[in-house]
Length: 272
Image 1: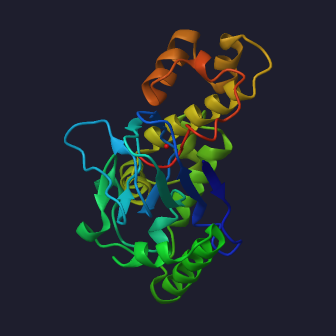
Image 2: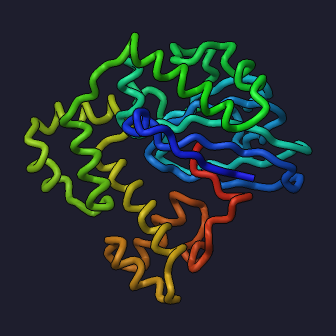
């Protein structure tokens, strides 16, 4: 039901993946969408899931939406007979090469692209809907983005890109003091630029990267010891580990232990 597709090599520095969520899920199914450090453009090509939260914009059919960087999990509940959504997930700093948008203004928000300066035209969802197969949709997106880059490309701040890559390399376990030593920037200026380009403070992004690594360790664990997994992931103790997993996923660490990623319920994209 939920499938991810890799971008072409020329777009890999900007795009994490393309994804499609399509099928006939159980009515009332609840889906926890986990923070992943990325930002998504979502195109609804049919009926879609409705948000659980009150006072949050509901995703409508045949529209396009932007989902900003997430610092917490959200939950969707499906009240339709079928679902069909297509997404373009931008890497941290990837979107800054296409637009001057300050991503921190869109943290934890889902916004119709008609209400913001978007790199995608309002009619783009209709053009995607005309494509009958996923390969055609991906080809259409890639042709569009490559043409967009040709005319509007903006170089990413290499220092922020370096910081993001360093945090990823250390799986979120690098202290902020050590990160600052590696970046060699004024802390206030660095934090402002990092938040502008990624939507997160360096500490928030490190927290999410550490969380993602912890979930991967749990899912691939061959032991039932949560404590050893917590230590491997860089948490001080089991209590801290459990609170972080619960806060960012809505579930206990044990719910992820030794499980493969369920294609039909776990999304890591939207508000995944």
